[in-house]
Length: 638
Image 1 (cartoon, rainbow, N blue to C red):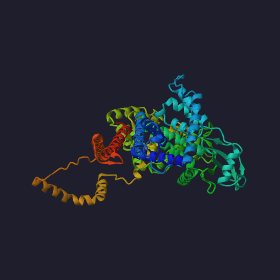
Image 2: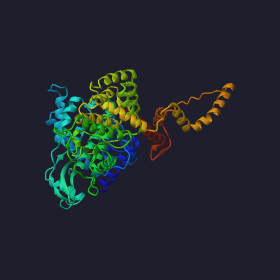
Image 3: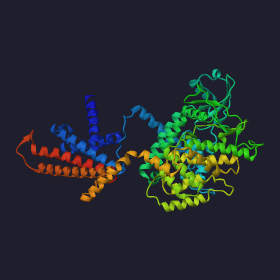
Image 4: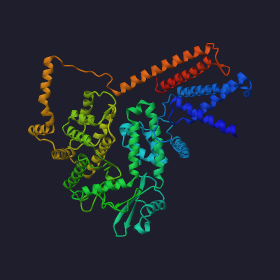
């Protein structure tokens, strides 16, 4: 028993020593342990060959055997690095709990197998295309696979349907039905969620529907009546969906990280950032308190509006998994007879009011409804529009608001340069951008944007995303949300008021909003405003000019060029110098140690010549330094 404990302790110490020597901070425990075990087995065989019987191994050889195990283990890790060429794992934070980590790993493996079987069953692994439109078969297979996998994969399909510039229009079209419905969850399970969060259904509601009004991937809605008689809509999160989504998100993030490190296409489209943003957005949708706050803010902003209103949230009956709000009166604007008896002028007033509200929220930095499709816009009996479902919202920062103004003005004036400048102000280009080529492409796009009746082509902003993709310009998530919102909004406006002159209304509204901003309206006001802002600089300017003139007269004007001002260059050079220094030191130590090993000596320690002993120790550390250097070079790809 004592020998077993001693052996385990020595093995643990050896694993820790090897990990420290090769620079592994976290992860790869199995790799290191296997390397130590294989090295230990190899050293045992070497000792058997030398001494015949392990019982005959002298005590002085034990330290040498330990050093040999360490060298062999490091060589094993180096072999793994050469085969896999993976980077060292440098994840920060505490080590995960072993049992929780094992359980999570088993859950991921089970989910991998489940999703893999679905993909095989739905034909995703076969590829090809049997449809008239390229990508239609792939799109159908994806849609069916996402429906079968459920949970986060339905949300992923919905996000892909909104990104045709990334997945092709044919695939996005096939994925569009995922936006509409999902299989309803069990009623008793939904009632249990309500009871746990806000109270028993029988006590909170006078009536509660037995069938859901609608079902989606994260939640489903029910019609109900409160004790005070108000009709409400109850949104209930699907039981267990949060845990399932977190598990699937972990899988997606791992896959995105792997693609980002190993493929150029993933880095070019910012796949990892897209998945991270998708995860953040999905987690926000899991917390209904965020939606309730957004809806309450929108309701307050439309209190005095004669055209648009937002249902009130029922305070005290909302939680992370339950949302209760007033039932929207009327019917969806997508209904065939929604506008029966309305003339064109009245419908244009409604469209203008909805567009005005959206633009004001966007340009003022307030949260705006990011999914204003016809199903989320109702026509009330009193003649007003009502916006519902604030699960998806967007918000623009100051740079994006300025870019939006440039974009609107560029579209209005058919000015591709203004559109380009607005987009590049907030977008990140993967490399140098050919301004002339981009302007030509934008000019062709703008030429197709206006219709003969003065309306705006709804495909404009969708095609704009394709242009940006072709020029490898990546926009922030909030900006892509904005462009998709415009695509949806234009379709809804067309349904409310066919032939509505969007550009005329947008020009008037953008001029009004720009006029409300603190912007000078004349050259005199501009000069006065800038003078007030930069008074301290103007005050110093004469003295600075006078000093510069004196320096020029004396001929003492000098220019200082600072080498290695860029931190990346400094790190590169420092790494090269350190690596070269380590190589020189390790080589010199190994060479000197080899010479000492071959030299004779009269002095001995326990029958071992001291010079030879020092040579063995020096050679051991020299070889370790060289192996560590080789591992670092392999990990960094060169």
